[in-house]
Length: 386
Image (cartoon, rainbow, N blue to C red):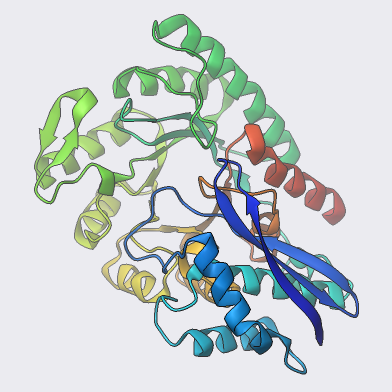
């Protein structure tokens, strides 16, 4: 594939912050790729550069992306790594490297006359199960970052999506009756913001689960609770040692139908993850900040049996090739894979294609607001597969 032109521009993300969009033109046409970002980032993610700095780096190195031919995404990504020369893209920025990598992946698909998911497919396609954020924390109001629901069984992705959307509105109505402080506010991922305590939220969601054959997912985002010695759940009035906090988490997952447990401990505590997994199976214990879509950290988790699921965020690692390698490695060892959005999202739908093309088991993309662009794309993909 020959690149005729590659450009960059600043655009707005859904949270009104700047991000970058890379535009690439070949003889087959033009593609665009915009890069999401997290408002909070795991310390092991690749380096994020401010938009202006990333654009300056692009102009400095643009000629490297317009050489004579490129044969595949792995070749492009290896060139990006050589150009950067560091292990975490601290030279050109992980956001710029991902923007270029995403644009090339789309261009390769275009050159083959295929959609991205079609180009990536190696096995019979499956549609991922939507893991939907219903209630979320904001500004310290909640000690748990996200309360999610997902269906036990999935007849089709579209049916699951519409059911979860209906339940999202039901949760809003229920909160308006039982939370006297509820103002119908939503966080960046469109989860309803509530002042209810943990047990109150989980009790409410449990009743919904019984009626609709659902399971609860919880993202503890525990690195934000940990001060180096204690886990601080300020709204619950708790200051817990590692052992006490581990018992607290285990008590919750056994009391309520919580079958998806994300980042229950701080990002370097592989051993506590392993202890919880042993006691909580067959529930899914998922690592996000624990792994940051990083193959080295994933291999460590596999060796220590720290989790049986991994969250996938391409912008944590900086290239599509590395993202694919993490997904494939996780699957090789029987782990579930969860393709995820970020808090600072754009209208780009590539992760929807990655979720199907790579055979991910779940997608974590919210269920309302701007997030629906990715869910709607998944519905279109399902229609094409039929």
